Amino acid sequence: MGTACRTALAASILAGIAQSKQPEQGADAVPLITEVLYAVPKGDEGDASRDGARHATGDEFVELFNPTDRPIPLAGWTITDRNPPDSGQFLFRFPAFSLGPGETVVVFNGLDQKILGPVGTADAPPEKPNEKFADAWVFSAGNTSGGVGFANDGDWACLSDPQGRAVACVVWGKPAEEPPLGGEKLAEAAKTSVASVQRTLAAPGGAFEAHPTVDGLRCSPGRPPPRTD
Image 1 (tube, rainbow, N blue to C red):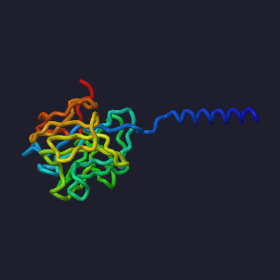
Image 2: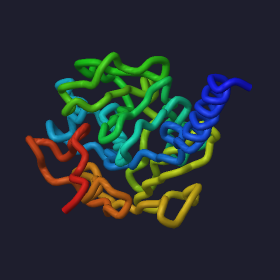
Image 3: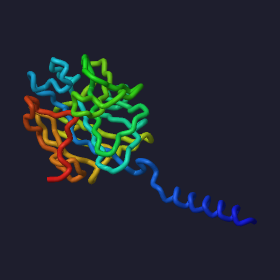
Image 4: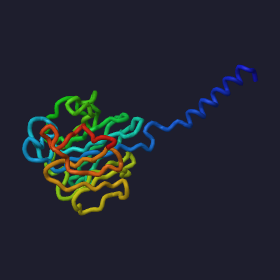
């Protein structure tokens, strides 16, 4: 084998080794649930989608934040509540979409909503972040039934991977069914009827508390809490 061939072979082997050591984009990375609005406040404070009208179901939302230093592909990931399929379950499945490092995505229930700006659906992501929500990515689940939404007295919001494995849950009140996971992946939120529940920090250890009033709202979709104290 000539010198040029040996050099090319060595370079190819080294490139293969380097590539094998590189982590897959988003491998083992999980978004953090940072805010859930399950009990929409009355009056203007409850107009989370900012379409000009408060809706007891349509304004519900779940906010996710990417606390890692790499993009997280979310295609096929789902957000669900405690209800089983075909029995009033809230279900949103992400289309082909990647959440960049430090980025936020908000998923609204969507019932009777006319959200301004770029809004994605289960079929396609928005063209760009929505400046009306602090440049977060915004989706609507496109719900069409008043019977599909979070239960105020007891429910959960769970994030599952494309294989259907629950990887993070936020629970409140006393739901009739046990959440699909426990331990550090299960966060307990305060039961409230006047605000969303939000983590005190955008980190796994951040506890959920009732949201304070910010800009006249008792929620802040698209504006995750700070990452440190």
